[in-house]
View 1 (cartoon, one colour):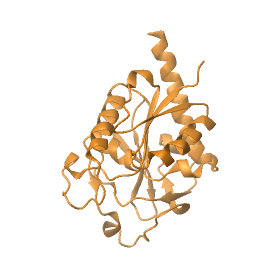
View 2 (cartoon, rainbow, N blue to C red):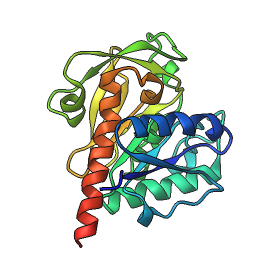
View 3 (cartoon, rainbow, N blue to C red):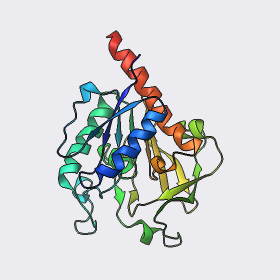
View 4 (cartoon, rainbow, N blue to C red):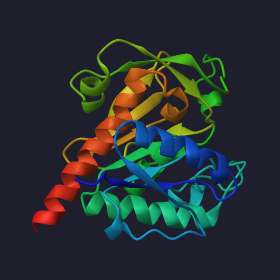
Length: 229
């Protein structure tokens, strides 16, 4: 069958350099990617899966946070991705959230964010790099553990916010060594995982490719089911 089509949501400001990396990751595991942002609309009926990418902070008004703490906001992107997340989750479209995208999945399900994690986790050394410099531990009996194995993973970190109160139907899939939530996932099918790190920059690591492969496999199954209806 045709390679499943994955809609990739990126920042209008930085999408020119982020989308090609995302598309390469998707292509390496058998999928195709199409870009969407606040000026490029995406018809969810035409895609088989969704990636909500990283970048700008999620607007605090979406979850009852404090206005003024976030350093970089994009309300138009917030509206786009909140709708994408809610529709993907409600219509059973496989979805992967990356950094901001993981946070948006949580917010779409009624959860909240910690707007200043480096104050909350003061003992954690702040890391801002695409290199794998932070260790995360996967929770037992989670989908993410099934995909990536149970050994600790070295990941990158570019975030200043993180998930606080979990959204409905989500569970923690990974934490770092300081207890900060680093991944969440839906407790039931279909596929919905959010990771706080950026696996797209770790394309050389087979455990990170496994996350993209799982999304594309789920998207392929979704496409086949849709064709049978």
